[in-house]
Length: 265
Ligand SMILES: [Zn+2]
Image 1 (cartoon, rainbow, N blue to C red):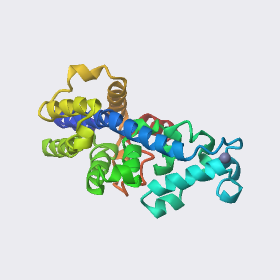
Image 2: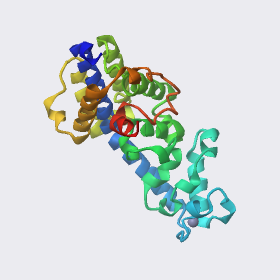
Image 3: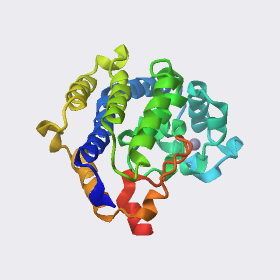
Image 4: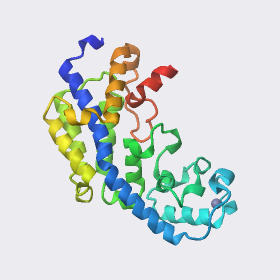
């Protein structure tokens, strides 16, 4: 079956897989600086002593037991949250509120869908980043729901659940166009990581090859290794799983974690 893959279509698939990694890299400066400044402004409001119990782990949803510091952090983070339904589903006992004052990564987990199931660091995971953009007010006014929806659909349809590992030229172009939009948003475009990503994406969009200068990046190498594994082991059975479900919830088993999937089969 895999022998029949058209090599051009396979190259298109690899390009899109790498482009998704480049997109994650490109967002780093914007995401970190924005989260750092939001975190600092909450920190100033919440200088009410230190937590000693790690209230979220210890008391979970029994908020009345929480210390004043953890309660204040929760209240301030809640003000930044957009979707009530998301907020109501946070698994507090899997968070460490004791670390909120010292780590914006820990604090921003409250905005990430299913943060406890993610195998990668939050900031290396495109769907986690999109979750932050969707649920955090300050991000959503810059990256709107249409852009987020397009990016998640692109990732899921053309990469994560594309077990044929194959894309037509027109599909590849569509993926690149949708990712490039992100790096033309003025607030993002002005950062260095965004400029670098845009430059690479523009070049890859019109070229069959992956540029030499990004091949040495560990996340690009990892992606290409995972695809190579997938190519060697993909069977008809996996092709039958090629279903596209809700882009926000079905993130657990996909091409990104192909080796993990193989391992548990
Ligand atoms: Zn506490």
